[in-house]
Image (cartoon, rainbow, N blue to C red; front, side, top):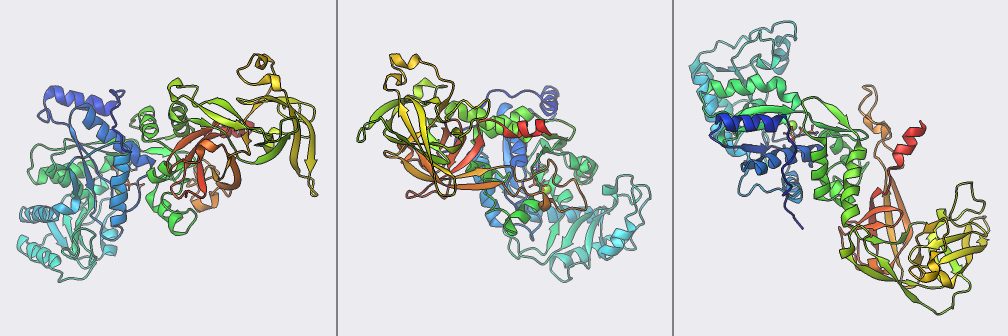
Length: 563
Ligand code: ATP
Ligand code: MG
């Protein structure tokens, strides 16, 4: 189900301050118009979610508009699968572009016409140098570049050549169109940057209509202008491109100009965010796909059990800054816990079952006990769970020889079964290989939860599931995909060397309470004492599959404290 992202006014940041100033000075005629411009060459990730929340959130809060624009100027890497997934993900996050979904490729004719205008004004030329030569003439940050031999071609010759490029008369790599700016500029991006290159590739949107394609730095400011964008928000690496962004707009004598504003991208520890690297993981099958629940993609997080609200809240918490930093992935996990704690019903499920026979409980008896669906929200009500002679508890809730601070079951000790009775362990049974396979316990009939006798205190309370009407399920536990905070930190090492070999653990024999029998794909629950779980998108009726979204507590905090 889609929901609307109608959060109340977000905390201020430097971008909102700029917009408020522009509203006061009436710089853009009281308009606020942003855009989210993904390149359809991969699935969106949590970093994109930050940009989406920022752009759409600003439009919402200032009664402006936000466009979705596919920045599809490179025909080689783009794919319709990505175009579809991007729309699905933005909608799922709770945002809406109404009828304003555009493609930069919709503007190819206009961009071409602008290029002709630049040539006619002596501001662009066709260069017939090889890419190697162009590279060699570029200079270095401390050394001026060298003018191309072709820089002073006549306007007439430039026009003829450019038309020839467009009509497919030349091979790839033989000619390019370049802006005539300044080969000695201290900003390398102003040293006669490329505007067009020849590419004889089929484009997902324009097919074979074009064999010249505009460069990002050229297409972007003009696409913004064509759409009437007022504030063009992008990540910090584009700061140094800003003079070029402005140069194109001014060279073409345009008015009502968009303003580019840069903000820090989201970096998360234990996470990679480059689409190229994520694609590598998919193609080389380190993960099951773009929506593998371990992926930082929006589709992966959705399948893992993240809610749109938790991601929006996360985006709000991290804020918008002008300096790059790394955010702790624990903050993302905190955001989903916070949301699911309020909204996910509690159930009982045993992940690694240990059989318990309650020897003094009548053989054929089944009792229905009352359980609370969510202590955070009484309106979620109560349910009945069956209790009987044979139940299952978590293997780790029993220790044959208890260590000092272990207050759960061990021989001779008592523990409370949540919503049920106090039981005492009298005996344990091992198989031939010495594993404990069964406990024999007695229950105290006076100790039923909620009854008068229940006031008797024992130190531990554990969860359990009765064999009666129980359900078998598969549960997938996920851990961080990488073992170190920054898998790309070492130049001489491949980031894949740091993949966590234990990032996925599949448990096949989990036993869940009967209320889960009709759980549907995407449904979310708190398994008491375990964490938050979500029914997987590949789950079937005859075998429920759950993904653990997050454990109840952050186990990494402890591990890192020890280090
Ligand atoms: P990647 O580097 O992951 O491949 P990209 O920048 O090439 O990402 P685009 O499709 O061009 O991907 O990104 C669309 C928009 O999302 C851009 O405005 C970009 O600045 C923004 N964006 C991308 N990554 C992040 C991030 N980690 N944090 C915030 N915004 C991001
Ligand atoms: Mg990009």
